[in-house]
Length: 413
Length: 116
Image (cartoon, chains in turn yellow, orange):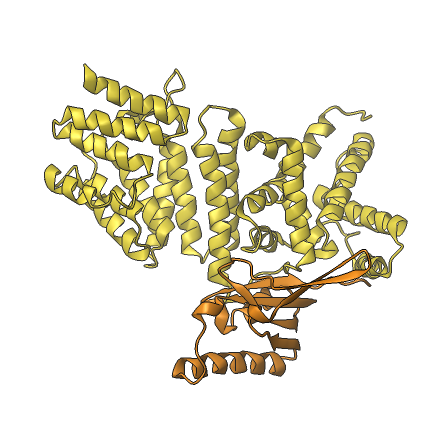
């Protein structure tokens, strides 16, 4: 037990701030996820006991790192039976001998970029990458991740173990990918971060831990942006997340119902996040290498800066959708482009173009919601109601269904 | 670490010998094998006869039971393999991507178990 009750909080704060960084260094030295996790936990426990008696050391992170490494040596010594372990052990003892961390101010290298590239390797299944990233870089516990993804602790623990074993057994390297692999590997990292954000963003309830997922995604995007500042798409993704995050308060009504952009109270939007997001976006767009994340952020920025739904620059938005479509032609982008165009061009022309997409989007709820909206605006109430019913049949999300039902009911009166 | 690269392709859509496409296809394999040799990662590599030549064997109660096949109704069949000794999975993926059938079929990369 500790003599100082505040030590527990200090340790928790240090774990939160430096945990990912310490874990990354341990992984780089131990090449063993389970061992790195265990000895870091040992070090935290040891910190509670020692710091409680003597107060915080000059450099708590250096202290934790050194203790964790010694705990690893200890664990390996006790476990050493096979020759392979001997190899690991002698490598660690050498590190320990070379280490001059008696000088606690020694700079600790930042290995987190390697860690995120490893956790988000394209050979690992996406959901497993998501879990492993949250566990290793954000320091979330298995329980917290399980709760966030509405699954059991056991399922999540298995998913984590599978991912860790894939890394070790197939020898996924712990390193920064070379130039030829860089684009594909960076795409994988960004898609994992975006997946984490969307899980929170699409949450059907205001459960705090899921809002927390959005914050974790932003934290990760900030980290990667800080470590790879030349990657414009990382800046683009961070800007996109900040701009989406800025509208969080207005996306739910007091009754926890989904509020569409059209009806959102723009006074609730977080101006600070918007100005950070747009500032960052301008900075990366000036480099002239706009990719999908920067373009999506540009659309979000136009929405955030519009005084009202009616005065939104739909023309500009449809032009950005054109560019997105050219990068990656797909019917969903074509649909979004038409939805934007419907506010500036002739409605019946837009509607004709929309119908041409139907065969490709026959199971896509937003297609029928958009179709219904256009029909209602053209005055064809009956056809609009049929389209809303089709959309409702295709959605599995309660909040979405309620929202569509409300739109549909409004037409019936 | 040694990796086995299993090459799956659609036999029925195979390229016929004697055509210019076949020359280019075999040339692709030759080029890949040359790189593996030059880089010192090549352990072994063979092409297999078509699946109609396959025989399956089960030993039950000490007796050999053989059977023609399997001719499972899969779209892609195992057509050959390489064993490459690579530094890590990324290297193995890089080398496997040079295999001509990767562009039309699937190559599976499996680390080989070590019993040290």
